[in-house]
Image (cartoon, rainbow, N blue to C red; front, top):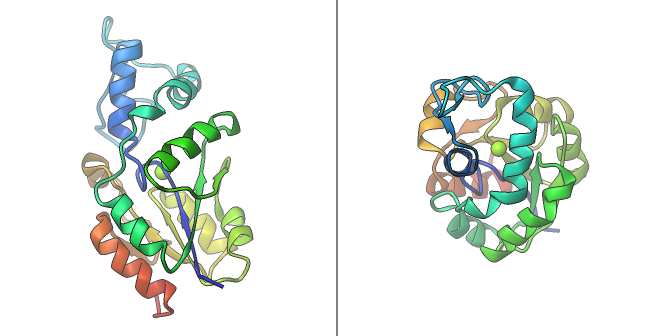
Length: 202
Ligand SMILES: [Mg+2]
């Protein structure tokens, strides 16, 4: 049985921050500029300058998943690296997206040549990482530190790679303390993933 590569989508396979900012500006006249690692608090209505309230946020994000996902380009090098890794590993996508918009994501990934299973998750990912790995040699890649903490707790044998594809965001997100490695470029990540799936110690 091939080893398993479990991939987050946003800021791992596909860009998220910059297409979200573009969609918010064009569809809602909202400005998003990351001065900290958060969405709420960094969003302002362009006409009034008023901050976007926390209660406004969930529907905006849903709107992006419904109408804006087509703006999400692959992270640099992602498709090339994953196409190469796929020869020796099974790939699955584990993404925190409402189930209603999962198929859009599936189709977009398929359009980039990644015809792979997409699991829509809600909340910490550790239990799903455990269920997907089922004791196989596996690597999990995500940009959000809490998911690495959760994976370390529930699936400690799975290799954990912290990656933040966006150049601005990566300066705002410190290395996840519960990941085995922090690598933001796909060129380098491909080597680490391959070595880890082949059984070299993390
Ligand atoms: Mg993500």
